[in-house]
Image (cartoon, rainbow, N blue to C red; front, top):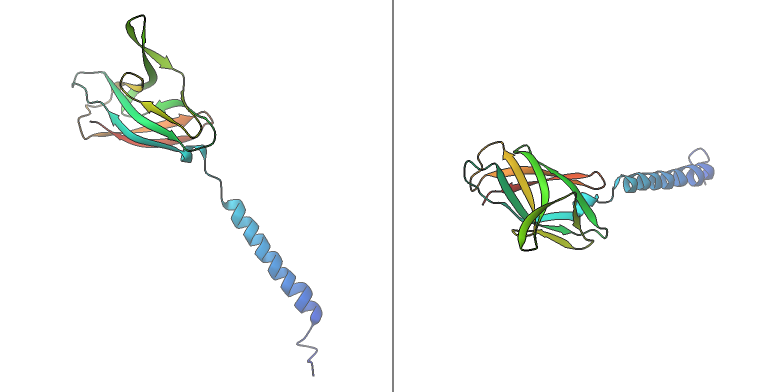
Length: 159
């Protein structure tokens, strides 16, 4: 015998199961929508970074590194900043007509799934007006700004 007060097919199959299913679906949708895709900055890895130690009176230093782009899109670094320097410029050393020149760059281009090497005699960062004497073993914090406005930081050691 079925207790009609306890057993209500309408409540059991129309409200409880669908509400539970709807609640589960809603929670799943909310969870999945909260998972943001990786930002472009998350695809950029800086390796082998170092700042060339300079004499104590030097007002200009240089930084070198490998910048790896694991994204499927080209990435542009449009600015680099640090509290440890008055200004930072992106440069390319190039020989033209037998004369070595440093050409300021408005951006650094890292190809999709590629790498850009900043090294002596090529691309590098010029670090102007150090705010303090940086010796071997010291580090400086840099903020890189990408073409899409994203920023990321990297600590770089003096060698």
